[in-house]
Length: 69
Image (cartoon, rainbow, N blue to C red; front, side, top):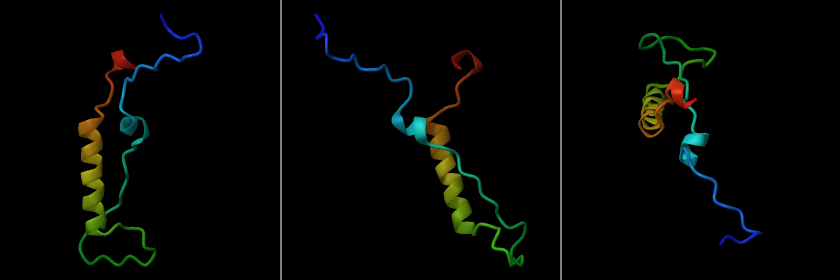
């Protein structure tokens, strides 16, 4: 018997991480030593960190297939 005031736990279809995580975009410089007066390019270090973060999101949160949407 369930408690009339209790709320059943909502089934989880994805982890909280996958509900909130978003892929990050980055803009690397087109070549080494390119002048960037407007500071529009990401550093090599930042770009590598973005790639690592996106790889984690891809591994932990696979995209749903059309049948799962």
